[in-house]
Length: 88
Image 1 (cartoon, rainbow, N blue to C red):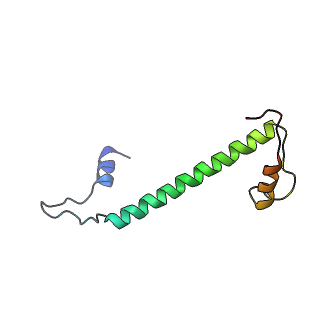
Image 2 (image 1 turned 30 degrees about the vertical axis):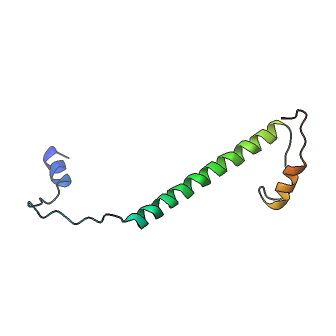
Image 3 (image 1 turned 60 degrees about the horizontal axis):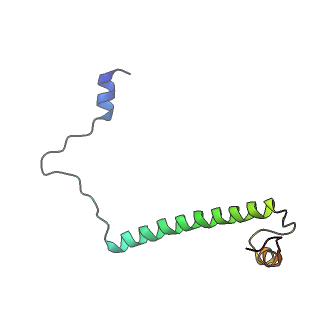
């Protein structure tokens, strides 16, 4: 592909002075919703990382949950029964 073809391919239609395309500026309600969605995503990632850290810690100390799915009530009850050699 030669330089002229690249230049033509990337070109946009010229805008005359004063004829800019309209844009939408979000109001405060939309911005608040965007912030909430971003925060929810970040919190989900933090919770996932914290759970992974806890499971890694438990495995290093020889504790493995053998039955059921992690993070259900049975798993949480099992977590509450764990004992370790050293107290915090």
